[in-house]
Length: 388
Image 1 (cartoon, rainbow, N blue to C red):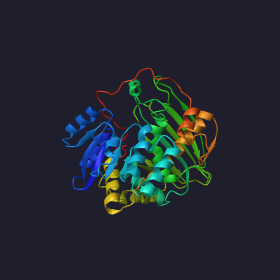
Image 2: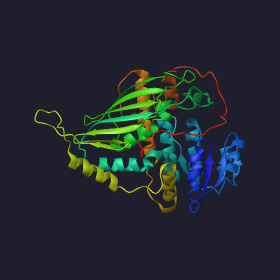
Image 3: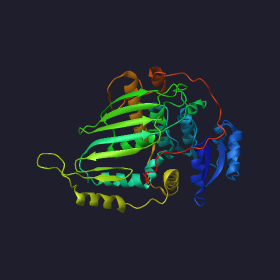
Image 4: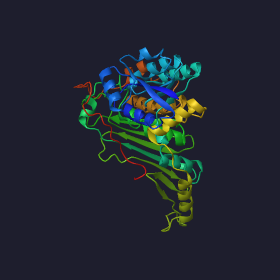
């Protein structure tokens, strides 16, 4: 039995709590911490949890009853809290984004190695059956060389979304839609194709004049084999129609799931009839990958618990989490400096540290209003990849 503490009891913490509660034989929640302890207490009551509630997470560092923590705080707090718990000999699952800078990521990874405790970074979309199946098909090389990937991380958030005290600021949120929304899609892209060699990007704030950060960005990624990818990150798109499309030498595949395999005429134009045999083979490969027992946060938390209890491999460890942040940091560097950015970003890069990044990013607007909490903090999500 693994004893869990929840650090930060904002809206995303509910996904963690509900996931842990799905595994009563493997874990139990024993503590909660929030700078607003009454909020933590109210959440504990909602889920009928008898837990220790504290305002300062440091009160839990020496609690021998705690084996692991879920960190669900605003991004700027992730690194310090994670490092403190790792050094205290406690396993850590930290919400996305992993941290506010690559330097912080490296410090977190170092703390995990030195303490010999697990560090996992939330990327729950990897734990979706359609995404696992898409990765499986790509790994089979059935579509040939990937020439182009199109990633649309399209969300919609009302103007008041950035009224929450920590949102919409470079210092506390660490960025806008690219970091805090497209992080899921960017993670899936780098998991499937790896990191590119260079990036060029532009960002804008089109509709949220109560935020310093971007609400829209477009990035072009180039890989060492000549392939290109384009990533659109947004919180201004009505409909939230999200997708990942991979255009290969032999066929096109995507989530929501779709397969097209065209065949060339002698003159290079497409034949009227597609390669139905290849399309059927790809469909079969997609369908043969089994349905996941647990999906989303529940899937990742199950992976985290099995790694703690049985030594199973983490799908997303600190190194994987850092790759995604490196890609996002390169997008911000390119957009803010107006340059093509080469990867990897090294420790002497001006965007490697949090201080360096804050010194180089532009403020689109300044926050005009701030609220401590919303009365309704329910999270709604975008496209269901199973339904399309």
